[in-house]
Length: 382
Image (cartoon, rainbow, N blue to C red):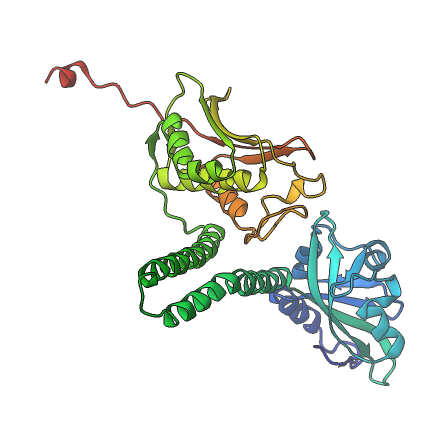
């Protein structure tokens, strides 16, 4: 929020140091400041304003609000040149409070800013210009949005296992003595254990995602055989695939070099991707494969014969909390986001190829492990 500014017209020769002091203040302010004359022409901008707008060159007078597109952040309604806080302050002669505006920056990116303005008056009270401030709140908005998404997912996805825990506990309290009591208690206990595992998995996923996004993930890379990684991942999926009548196939090209990776983390990637494939596929097969890539890396592929991913969803499959519009199973939408973060932390990349009705293939690369250094001849014979 900024308030009205009154400019006292100085006597000739007085206040010669004022412009320099003003420029020094504007230079160090972290808030973008723009000044305009009475006609709305931008006549001065500080460095923070240029950074916010993604501009290295001085603003052309008046060009900023005529050429740049913007929207109200909450409603998405386009902002006309006359709707800016600066222009309204000039027209009304009143200060305009902070408003959230999404701007198209000069470098092609978007930012959300808190924009306010106030008129500048001379000693006789006439409006001779206006000053406007821009505070970049893009990251703050993103953080709030992420927090809201986390709360939504946690409240939604924890509700079902918590209900199972409540019902299972109630069933245990109602058990009567008799020959079937022990079997009924074991079934209730199994349901409680399964619900607990689901809640732990969601909590682990949220913690993994936060750790990845903050760059705090600890990695213990070592040379790993790609075929062994596929085999261990398949062992973890075999029961789920068998329960749905799916074939589970493995294919590792001969002579693949070891990959440099944290074994547990790569198994987590394979598990997240392949378990999604099993859930999505009603009949047919899920295949895990590995082959050499031209640059020395190894590419892993998980193919399924499921319904495929709609074209509109495909670019977003690795976004956090993203679940396909046609998904038939419940989930937090975190598995593929975590997989992407883990692959990228290894220096690899991950992508998906799909078409409706033609199944899906998710591929990711891992760098080959550096060959062990040759030992000197005397060391080999020591």
